[in-house]
Length: 331
Length: 211
Image (tube, rainbow over all chains, first blue to last red; front, side, top):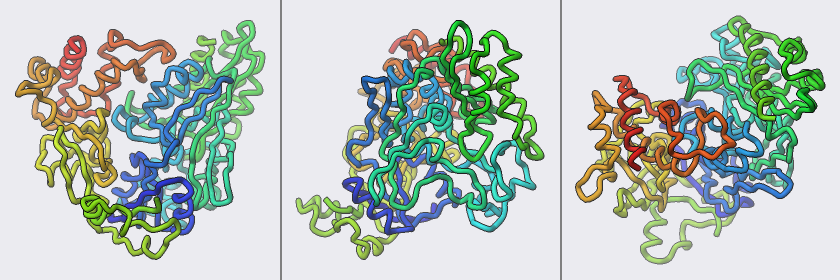
């Protein structure tokens, strides 16, 4: 493995100051993505800064109003097993349980989960094929190459990769807030502004700059949370990344959708919110699958499939329908 | 406390009861920070299968390599070395983890259990017995990882953790709900290329009933 130095910080102020000044250092928490990236030479940090010892960042807090504060160092398995998370936001627990394996969920942190880098095989390729995310300006191998698993929304000529996190999809649907400490103080980043589209700078995955440390993710109280479901479609039934996935959360009124929150994974460089469908779904009877389908289709007019992933356009809509129906059964 | 570079000096200082004199600089102390070599050796104190051990590793050394090459604990296997196969599963502070994706130098003070540490008073762990009884292996390469994963997984089920196979995660999960499909889902991080899966599931189900 590529060699690196190892440091640790006593508090977040120190971690931030060092990270801001040293472009060769990266934070490490669970390490389940970073160690793989280093082994694949897709990341070659000079130094790692172990943040596992930072105080007060591993809690899962359920507040009186039904909102959650997930510490950035809480482990996936802690959040997934938490009885109140399961009761208030079943799709958060499900998004975690449908990801990785039991061992990895015990290791991986919540902050690290949303920082995961794409699983695009060209990005991770050990033979250093062109990849703008890996080496800016080198080109995109996936665009002319095998792109069955890649984006159908929001991609650019520079990058057609998708974001791999399941949890991020649920958090996007719920308009979570990423709490970041940085050199200029604390920031609260709305989830839909956290991850970004590739445009001409796909090397940048998100809104964070050097010296920014995720300390917690807040999930505001949401009426839709309880009747929610995370549905993941993949090539293997377990321990695999999504082809497409859906986080669906609704409130109902007399068997009709009153409000819906929908986001998808596996279709874009960031969790993809189906806002047009959310609007169109208001008032639609949950037992009218044709009407549900028509409403969902409103978010797919701008789908731009690649050479090998046109199937995702249909698959994504069917997955959304099923996720909505399962969420509806929980209302 | 300032920034701490984890290195040999820490141990020496610790032994002398003088931690803090040499390896600690204040935050933003770029000079000393940049001087730290990637290959600098790190001393780590671990409790392994009940014994306190101090090992010297590079920062990049995985716990898996430290266990096998430095501590002679070769029961833990290196399969993919990428966090995909589960052959390297061990317990850290009683939780199942992948030792190939874990840096040894980050485990200071942790309790590590490997397959060699499962027996008690010369008697195999009940899950080890169950693997023999149910013929839960063929070549045996994945077996220690399967057993370490299975032991911790049964504890997770006893603690009420749901899984992706749980129909309603909002409901309380009890060990009585640990069906074959639950076991398969919870063990999906451990591959067996001899495909002994049916017998592995039987072995775990039988040990879980007795647990």
